[in-house]
Amino acid sequence: CKNLQKYLASEFEMKSLGDLKYFLGIEVARSKHGIFLSQRKYVLDLLAKTRMLDCKPIDTPSKQNHKLELYPDQVPIDKERYQRLVEKLNYLAHTRPDIAYAVSVVSQFMHSPSEDHMGVVMCVLWYLKVTPGKGLMFSKYGHTDVEGYTDTDWAGSVTNRCFTSGYFTFVGGNLVT
Image (cartoon, rainbow, N blue to C red; front, side):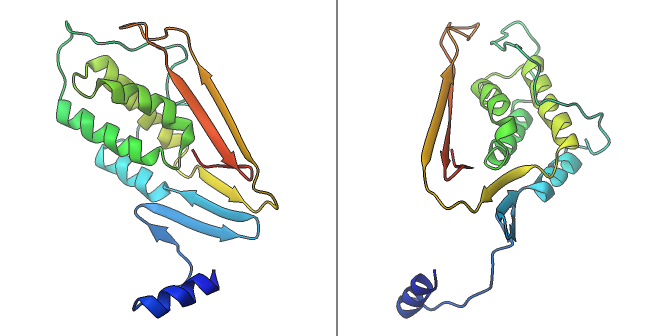
């Protein structure tokens, strides 16, 4: 790391600001066990902006086996608000794999959201109320083994019978994708 800094300093004008603590809404905490990434402030700011700091929290980001589809007969909702919320949740999912699936599902309806879709977004926000400080821990391991896991459902989409798949990749025991 020091050699890289020396090389970059020889090529560019730069100064060291010390260890990274906060970057683009991501809090970085170092310990002897590794590096912890969290977006606690981002979550609390999001809950404050949506006036949900006093909401009733729930234990999971979405209901089990809840299937969403397009609802052409439902009253349309504020599409721009829905899109902004989903975009914010999508950014938050970078350090919160526990909400990644629910966010990926609601992001499929950005073009035509309904009350049911917004209800799932609200569930994610209610869940965040319970867990604002969750994040990713990158532990100091002595290996760099790569492990991958994947799963898919069978024609799980109610709308078009397409499947949904997901995957996790770990390097050195740390979740990276």
